[in-house]
Each structure stands twice: as structure tokens, then as C-alpha cells.
Image (cartoon, rainbow, N blue to C red; front, side, top):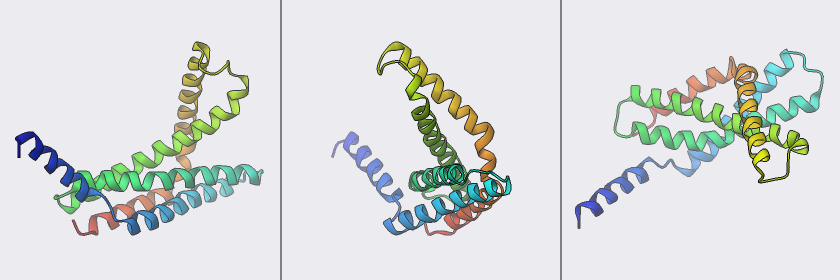
Length: 172
């Protein structure tokens, strides 16, 4: 075996060991999605939003972001913390889960925002359309960071802490 092939094999084995099991991935995704959706729902109900349709849309958006984020963050946290102590596992889970959840929910929000404004945009794949797409997505991301992240508190942060503790307790 050549040195290049040995390095490639070792790296592939490392990635393979970091892959989470199907049960934890599906159950965790469902649980994380429900928790993130519930966090948004509770905050919106406490803020006395008047339109139930918009409450449902925002709650489903947060649940969708959570469902997409959990498997990605679980794999990333396992990859970072493989062969390391519980403190590293806890920190990796907290950072990866928070970043993936906020990032993917922001992406879903930006896509929904873009679909609303698409009616007024230039024809697809023109230079003007490209600028409109880029700036619409940037404005939507900024708007989510300013207005949307508050919907994760306090329930989402408590769930983040609990999920990170669960991850740190798992066998490496």
C-alpha cells in the first residue's frame, strides 16, 4: 500500500467512525425539530401574534431548520470530538448544533423570503436577477439574525444545553 493510499484509507475510516447511527439521527432529528418548533410557537403565542397562519408558518420553519440541522451537526460534532474527552464533546455539540440550527433555519427563512419577492424580480439568470437574489438573501439573513434568533430563547437554549450533555455522555 502506498503512503497516499494509507492516508486516504485512514481518513475514510475516521469519517466512517464519526457517522452517527440511524436511530439516534432520526429520533434526534424529530425531537430537535419538535423542540425548535415548540420554542418558536411558545414565543409567538406569548408575543400575542394575531394571525394563526403566520404562527404556524414560522413554527414549521423553525421545526424544518431543526430537522435539517440535527443530523449535520451530530456528524460534525462526532467528527470534531472523536477520541477526545467529554468536555470537548460537550463544546463541539453545543457549537455545531447552535451553528447548524441557526444557519439552516436562516437559509430556509431566506428562501421563503426570496419566494415572496420573486414576483417583482427580473427574469431568471440575468445580471439584475443575480444582484436581486444576492441582496434579498442577505437582507433576509440579516432580518432573521435580528428578529428570529430571539425565538430560540429560553426553550431552545435549554434544549441546546440538554442535547450537548446527552452528546457528551455518549460512548466514543
